[in-house]
Length: 304
Length: 296
View 1 (spheres, each protein chain N blue to C red):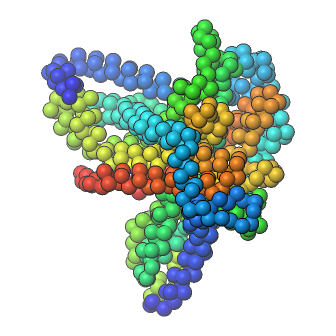
View 2: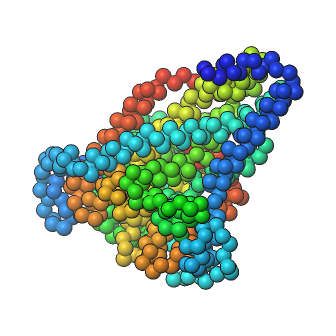
View 3: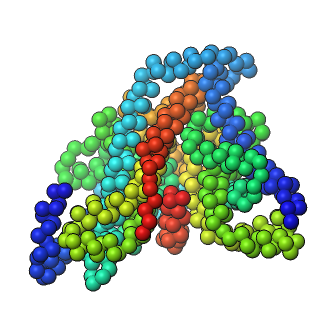
C-alpha cells in the first residue's frame, strides 16, 4: 500500500520548491549579502564593505523621516479602519433592534456591504491614479472643485507637507473599511442570538451590548485585522509611489522605507545601500509581527 | 461605562417610547451608512463623468454632466494610450500566474498535509515564512535572477514570479484545507490499486473544490493588482508587455505632459468598469474568497 510513496512525494514537491527557492528564498538571501557590499550593478567586481551601508542608513535624514511616517501610519490606519468598520458592522448586523426573539440587521445591509467592499478589489495603482484626480490642487480635482463651489480656496492635499500624509491615510482607510466590515460581520453573525437576548433582558442598551457582548466575542477578528493592517501598512509603498508628489514628497513628508529602497535601487542604482535599507525594514516588520503575536498569543478560543 | 447610566432606564420605558427611540436611532444609522456609501461612490461617478468631458468641462465643475457624450476620449484611451493591450496583457499574465500557482500550490499542500516523511515540517515552514517577508527586499536580486534566466521583459518571467510569490499563502491555506478533508475515500482508492497521482487529480482535487475556488479568487485579485513585480521585471523598453496597473500609472504621467485629462479619465474608467461588472456578478464569492484568507 505504501508502494511508490516517496517517488510521488518527491515528484510533487520538486517543482513548487524549486520555483520558490529560485524566485523567493534565493533573492532574499542574496539581499542580505548585497547589503554588505558597495555593489552598483555596473562593475563586475563587488567589494565587501561590512556594515558601512548600515552606518549610512542611520545617518540618512530620509530614513528617519520614513521611520516617523511608518509610526504615524501604524498608529492611525489600523485604528481608524477598525473603528469605522466595527461601527458599521454593528449597525448593519445587530443594531436593527430585536423583534420577538431575533436581533436583525438594518434594512439594505446587503447593498451597503456590496458598496463598501468594492474599493478593496481596485488595484492600488488604480487607487493612486484615481485619488490623484480627486486631490488635484486646482478646481479640476473633485475635492477642490466642490470646495471652490463653496467659496473656499484650493487646498494642496498632496503638496502641503502637513496634509500630504493624512490625505494618503484617508485613501488607505477608504479602501479598507469595506473589507473589515465584511470580516467583522461574519464574526458577528456567528455570535448566538441568545447572548443578545440575555443582554436585552438585563436592560443593556446598544452601546452597552456592543462593548460588553459583541466586542469581546470579536476579539480574535479584531486582532487578526490589526496584524494584517499593521504588516500591510509597513509594506505599503505602491500607493505612496503612485499618489504622492515627487515619490514620497513633498520633501520626504510621505516617504516610507519601501519608497527609499526603491529610489536607492532603481533611481540611484545604489544596490548595496538599497538592500541595507531593505534589511532594516525586514527586521522592523519581523519585530512588529513578533511583538503583536506575543501580545495576542493568549487568544483563547471562544466556544459557544 | 458612561452608557450605563443612560441605558439603564431605557428598559423601563413604555413599549411605544422604546419603539420611537429605535426608529430615531435607525434613521441616524442610515444617515451614517448612506454618507459612507456616498464617499465610496462619488469618486467613481466623478471619474466616469469626467471620461466624457473635455478639459474646459473637467476644470469647470467636478460632478456636472458632460455637455455631450465624447466617446473620442474612450477611443484615444483604448488605441493611443493602449489600455486595451494592457488589459489583454493582464488577462494573459494573471491566467498563467494563477493556473501555475494553483497547480503547484495544491500539489505541495496536498503532499505536506497528507503524507508523513522526513523534512515535511521544514518544507512547510520554509513556505509559510515567505508570508512575512517584505517583497521589495528581494526585488533587486530577483531582477538579476530573472535577467540571468533571459526572462526580463517577458510574460513568462512575470508568470513565474507571480506564482512563486503567491505560493506561501496558497500552500499555507491549502495545507490547512486538505487536512480537514476525510481520508477514507483516498485510502479505499489506494487499496483498489489507484496511483497516488490519480488519487490527487481525480479524488482529492474535486473534494477540495470549495477551498480551491476561494483561493483562486484571492489569487486572481492579488495578481491582477500586483504592481511591484511588473514594475521591476518589465522595464520601460518592454512597453507593449505592460500590465494594466503599471500601464495606468504610465498613462497618468503622460496625461500630465499632454494635458489629455479626458483620456486619463476614460483610461481609468476602462480599468475600473470590467472589475465592477465582475464584482457585482460575483460579489458573494469575492467577499468570502478574500475574507476566508484572513480568517484561516
